Amino acid sequence: MQGNMEMIKAILAGGKKVVALTGAGISAESGVPTFRGREGLWKNHHAEDLARPDAFEAKPELVWEFYNWRRDLVKKCEPNPAHLALVELELQLPNFLLITQNVDGLHAKAGSRKLLEMHGSLWRLKCTTCTHAREDFSELPELPECPVCGHLLRPGVVWFGEPLVPGVLKLAISQIAAADVFLSIGTSNMVQPAASFYQLAKDHGAVTVEINLEPTPNTGFMDFALHGKAADILPKLVTGLSE
Ligand code: OAD
Image (cartoon, rainbow, N blue to C red; front, side, top):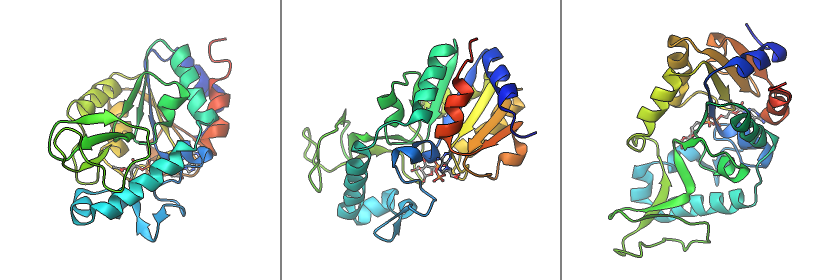
């Protein structure tokens, strides 16, 4: 079954536990390029070719240049109505969790607090050698160094080929398995494990809803799908929910 806004609203309002998963599409209206769209290239490099440990090992200057460019770009971006609608959903629903694949920090900037940033954050730095880690919004040198041990710092994000931060996947799985409603928003569903979360939710009896600009490989398996801009759809979905 596909889009029926009123029916989805009723299901959301009645859902005891709602989990939302977001991807790059939710930040598109804020001006953050998606990974697999036409804007997903930087200096002719695919993000997937730079967001990986072997790329950082071989060319740390290039990878840091890419991340410093992304930090500069995202710093100028503001949350859009889709981010704000999810804050509203968190406030309206007693049991809500937002899981994001995004590293742009825009959900936190919008005010989401029940938030799991499963791929880390552009604003987090961690040492390649010691346990030093910190949040840092400042402009960084080309190759930032650890203030504790002097070794190279790296972005505090999960790269391709790396495991998720311990505990994060476990928490996501337990929350999704307990959900009554699962929302998949602005993600191409191309990257695991997030791409399979809908299946886990479905297996445990949740109603699944996709909100995306266009159909994804998962669309046919969802109970509902609404296609269009998240910044247009989500505010409508959330308005009047508690009435
Ligand atoms: P993608 O770039 O793969 O997909 C973005 C999705 O958002 C696409 O399906 C678009 O159709 C959709 N979209 C674009 N604009 C939209 C809008 N205004 N409203 C709603 N949807 C819109 O990004 P992700 O699925 O987030 O991983 O990618 C998943 C992961 O792969 C990322 O977290 C990153 C990436 O490479 C790591 O870095 C580990």
